[in-house]
Image 1 (cartoon, rainbow, N blue to C red):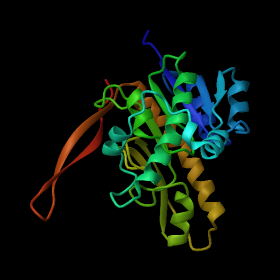
Image 2 (cartoon, helix red, strand yellow):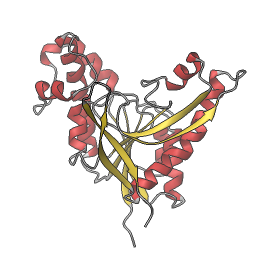
Image 3 (tube, rainbow, N blue to C red):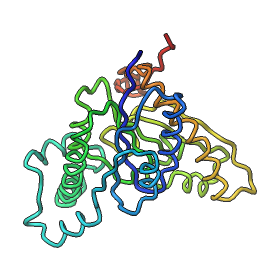
Length: 266
C-alpha cells in the first residue's frame, strides 16, 4: 500500500480551505494525512475545525512578536542563524531604493516569528506545507528551511485572484474594483516574492454586472474548495514537476522562469 503523505497546514482565520483539505483526506480523495495545524492567531476559528478532527494544533502569536520587537528593538531575540545579507540577496519584496533599516526590521520580525513556527513544526515529519489563508508573508529564512531541495518545492498557497494579476491580500476585492468580467483563484508554490511562485493550477468564473463583492467572494471560495484539494492530490501522487523554462524577450535577452508541469497519472 502506498504511504500517505504528511501535510502541515498554516491558517489565520476561519479555515474553510482547511476543511476542504480535511474532507479530501478523510474521503481518500487526497492520499494524505494532516499532521498539524498552526496559526498566527489564537482566535482563528480554523483551530476548532482541526480539534474537531483530532489534529494537533499550535499558535505563534505574531501580534505579540511585533509589539515586543518595536518596544525593545535593541534586545530583540533574533535567531542566531539569521543572516540579513543572505536574505536581502534572495528576497523579491523590496526594491534597491527601499531604506535598509525598513528592510532589516521587516525581515528581523519575520525571522523571530518564523523561527518559532519552525520550532513548533519540528516534532512533525511532513512532506507538504499548505498555507490555507495564512496571512503572513514568508521570508527566505523560513522558505529555505522547508525547501531543502529547490527542485522540489513543498510550500503551497492558494491566492484569491488569477495571478499574476492582483497579488497581495485582497485579490477578490481588487478584481471587483478593477471591473473585471472574469475572476478566479490560483494555487502556486511559494517563492521569495509576494504571490510570484510557480503556478500549479487556476480556475476561473464569470462576473456579472449586477454582482457584489460578496457574490464574487462566495463564488471564489466555492472553487477554491475544489481546486486546492485537487492540487494537493497531484502533489501526493508525485505528478508535479518543476521545470526551468527560458523565454526570449524583445531586447534579445533571455529570462528564465520556473513552471510546473502536471504529469499524467501512472
